[in-house]
Amino acid sequence: MFSVSALLRRIATVCVSASLFAFVALAGTAHAGEFDGVTIKFAKAPHGADEIALMEEWLAPFKAATGMEIEHIVIPWGELEALYSANFAGSDVYDVTYQTSTHLNLFGSRGTFSDLDGRFNAADYASERSLFPDNIVNPSYYGDELYGIPAVIGTIVMYVNLDMLDAAGLSIPTNNEELMATAKAVQNPPEVWGFNSPSTVKDYGWYWFYNMIHNYGGDMVSDDMESATFDSPAVRNALQFAVDLRCNDKVQPPLGQYDREAALSLFKAGKLAMMVEEPSRVIPLEDEGLPFNWTIVQPVGAAGGKQTQFSTTGYYAVAAKSKEQDAAWALTKYLVGTDFATSFNNHYGFVGTRSDVDSSGGNKLLQDNFGWAMTTWDGLLPHPKIAQMLDEFGKALEAVTTCDVSIDEQVADTQDRMEKILAR
Image 1 (cartoon, helix red, strand yellow):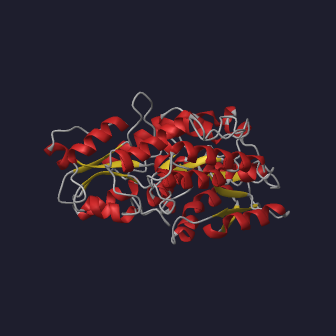
Image 2 (cartoon, helix red, strand yellow):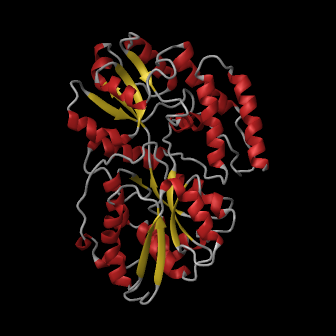
Image 3 (cartoon, helix red, strand yellow):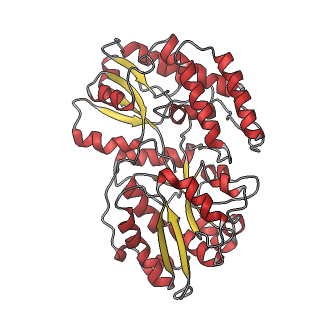
């Protein structure tokens, strides 16, 4: 899955040993010795320098129970698309791979992956399937085909300086109108600012504002993934919100004055009332012991609309050319199963895609975030060309928040470019 940091900061570090995974946990995955003599090639880009060693440890119980041999191939993030494309074009393919929202259906639409819908919704998997919330599963489909099983999601949250709001007698805002009023009331720029949410291309601005498109009831691509819908009321309203923050109501510093890390420093110094960021900041901020009371809440919704969570998704996919479809599916089930998912997500700070996977490490704030993700998460539609479309959204967002470009002009230009992307 996409991470706006080079590597997500760890939320919790969990010491995992093979004994953690009881054999009974594998009962629904495979039978003892079922895959003796079978070797599966498993390729994944790592989420940490320690993942190679940890993956060996986490996979050991499954290998021992099933007799399967697993060849773990590490794919560098920067070479991911090129290396996967080359491998999938050959005959000796990676049987199981980790894919992100930006690549799952890019490859899936080319016939690269097996459609897992039948297996995922089969009667013998029903008890497991029931643990995956539909709001996470449904956006993963490309038409009627499911090319990967969702395994990890990220989230975005709003950090709030409670002391600043309390001093002004204000409550935590829950929608964009309340946010604007609250930010105005507590700020004193340029010394103290009311709010910050990144909107530059450098800081992946689209990632922090996409939820507002969903909050207004729309998207930048149609539900059937056939048409660009950037020129729509939902997108216009989301862009207007971003423009109001910086240009009209001026509760956010001018574009480019503070990047993500600088804004975080402002918050830690008590000079920023609210900011949108990753939940991976929670543990480090708690460890620092900030000199004021703070919390995290779900990002504000749209007045009269919805209040949703957003991020991209990480999936496990089975190669259509794999000669070991049953073994590859068994490994996939293990990778998205309770025990592996709990260990992986706790270690790397992701939110699991199952209702029984708690990656909070017992942290109350992160437990709250898990609840929001399970109930209001509305993630990125994994269109085959979504990465190119996101680039265009990011450029449009940055352009309008310079305060020099009109929303109408930018929306029209971006819609045209997105239509050309889809037509290619």
